[in-house]
Image (cartoon, rainbow, N blue to C red):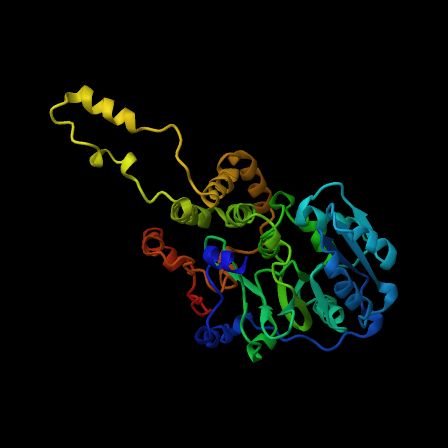
Length: 429
C-alpha cells in the first residue's frame, strides 16, 4: 500500500528536503502557555473506530488505561464497523470498561466518528484516535492543554512510526488541488518536529477538538466516508474562524495504513481522488474556486489518462487510419467501422478516478448547496489560510506531460501569483 500511495501521491520528503521543512515561517509558530493543573482538565471522550482490528485493541486500549489523566474525566467510546474477526467479543470480555457501539455494516470513518461523538457523555473535548495507535501516558494532557488555554479549537498530536524511528505526522498541509501532506512523513525525528505550529488540519488519527466547535462545524462530512475528512474539517474550521495547532508534546505511535492495505486499491483510489476535490469545492471562496477548478480538473484528468492503459491510440485517430485511396469514401467508412469496438478496456484505477470526479460533476447542485452552507459561515479570508498549505505548488507526478500541464495551468490561471511559495522541500522521487 505504501508503494501504491507513493505512485499516486509522490513519496515522502527526502533528507535534503528536510532542512527546508524545518524552516517554517515564523508567523506559523506558536508559543504555548504553561502546564494545565489537574483540576482544570476537561471531560474528554476518546472516540475510536474499529474494523477488524482485534489485533490492535490490546495495544491501543492498554495505553489508554495507562494515561496520566483523571479517570473520572475521561471515557473511551469505540464504534465497531461490522467487524468479523472477533473484535466485539474481545471488547466485551476483556475491555468492558469501554463504551461500545456495534454497527450492522461499515458506515465509514466520518459517520462512525460522528456516531461515537454523539454517544459520549457530556464531553467538553472530543478526541479521535485510530485503533492502530498506542499513546504515551502524558498524551491526552498535552493534547487538550492548548484547548484549555484557549489557544486554539483543535490540536494534532505528534505521530511516530510504531517503532519510534520515523515521524508519521507533525502537522499537515496540502497543494492547491487538495492533495494532503503529513509534514515530516518518514523523516527521522529532529528538532523541527518539536516546535508547536499552526496547522491546516489535525490528523484524524490522533486529534482533539473542542466539543462545542465540533458540533458547530457539523462534525466530519459523512459523505466523504473515509480519507480527507480531517483535511476538510480542519480547512472548514479555519474558514469559520477557528485555529488548529500541532502539539508536539502529545506523543503517539502508529501502524501506518494498517486498515487500508487490506482493501482493493481502486476503492482507496476513488476516495483519495474524490475527497480532495470535494474539499476544494466546499472550502475555497468564489474568487479562488474560479481560479482553481479548471486546473484541478485538468490535472486529475491527466492522472486518469496516465493510469488508463490506453497506450495504443491508433483505433481512435483518424489521421492514422488506413489510406482510403482506391476504395472511395464508402470503402474508407467500411474499413473504419470494421475496426470500431463497442468497448475498450481501461484499468480499474482510471475507472475509480472517473467515478470519483463524477461524484462532484454528476451531483453539482447538491455539492453547490453543501458549498453554500460553508461559505455562508465564512469568517476568515482565503489569503490568510493559504500560508497553512505549506506546499501549494507541489507537483505530485513525475510524468513530463503532467508537469508541463501543471506549470502551464498555474501560469494561465495566475496560481503562481495567488499562492505563496512552497516552504517544504521537494518530495523524494
